[in-house]
Picture 1 (cartoon, rainbow, N blue to C red):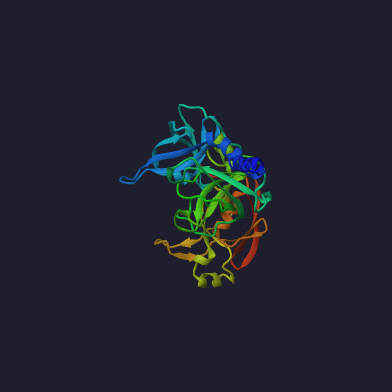
Picture 2 (picture 1 turned 60 degrees about the vertical axis):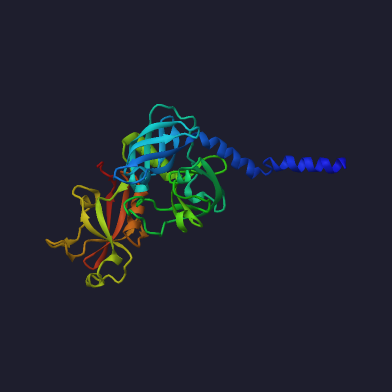
Length: 347
């Protein structure tokens, strides 16, 4: 009888405790992350719309990282800490190309901050455990757990093609997340941020969906650039592009192209890298109708491209001052052009 009582006592006691190393690690990551994670909220500029809520996290005493699309059209920004205190915030700098915004919080020093993982995205093993903390539907902070399900480009069309256009590869996770989780830190079991949640692909409101996150190495580089220069310092081509599969096949055949893999240079920015390298844009009439194709980009540094998005993503891997080699199709023949990238101009 005494043995049975002891066994029941031990079973009850163990039931109230974390018993596996993974449970302990998850709990510690969540506990340490809570003070650094904030609810981001603001009023839409369009009248009659409800307040928008997202998530962010401190990366330094007064700076919070969140998604650009969360704060894009908001005024009267505030952040709420896990202890319920609310403080005003303002946009310090933004990076729409990878959907990141850096906020300055007034009136409080961060009770905690999170560090980005220094591991290269390509080195992250599929199946590794991931923890995220955020404010789904504004509720929380709440934590969820999953695994790294995959790494690769996002094939689903974005509501705004200009936001996140320079993210080459995303992290995908099965960790449950939904509206309001945008900007949540996605962490490994050492508590390092490996990604920033940007979207969910799948079922309604994320039910049964797959979480999508921007890799930490890209975000960390952007934060460093925004702090130092106020704008991202990824490479910029200085030309607008059109994917070949968007063009009339008759025009492609007229210049000897038998593929729709590539991107046409539509317009060249005066004084930009493409202009200095002699790239040619398309010819159009006064009504904007296409008369003749511009240069067609087939590859960047030997990497074949399938569309304009891939050109942008490949160029964005490089920094200002880097030289890249473009393989072009011009007037029925293939040629190569070298150009030196610069930072995207401040708008």
